[in-house]
Length: 264
Image (cartoon, rainbow, N blue to C red; front, side, top):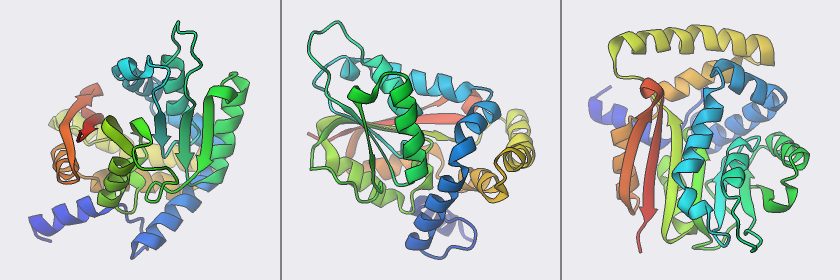
């Protein structure tokens, strides 16, 4: 495959093994995450050594100025079991007497949403969090509905990355912010080799043993390997009409935070 074709394939969207088009890819991803929902949180924390908790909190802190405004409208898209939504909700606690606008989490896997709602209820966050079943490529929100759209480890699973960015751009208010936190492959050779061994050998074996689903945890490293490099995704964001596009690597390059603004 030529370099141009390889880049085009990475930029198109996820393609789990055996899928040939966007509809099949989307359906398989939804079914996969629905099946692993009961063990999803346990495995996230176990396999990341709880770095995933730190990464979400760090993202929330980055957008503290937006979250500190009670009227800010915030969406966690591809929210899964709601960990980023909860981190964002915790970060938006202010001394203001005004009741903050509800923070919304959206996902297309109903079993994930059920656990998100349970967690919010246990923590007393039910009133300030709303969870809705929705596909990230066709969100049920009005144009310009949000001041911040954020996603953690969900964008990679979209069947069409350009369409996802266009939808995020549509629902962001002029000047609104986008945050995409995703896995990446480290650049330094030694750490990349260690990471590759863990990600391709250890993680799938442990994930399959604990969740009972080998497909989901072999899909994870495959999807990361196929995902656009940070600079490629940044360029796609710019072509999708976003301004102020930037990215930064965290934790030796394991994850990358992409940020952008909707043009005014």
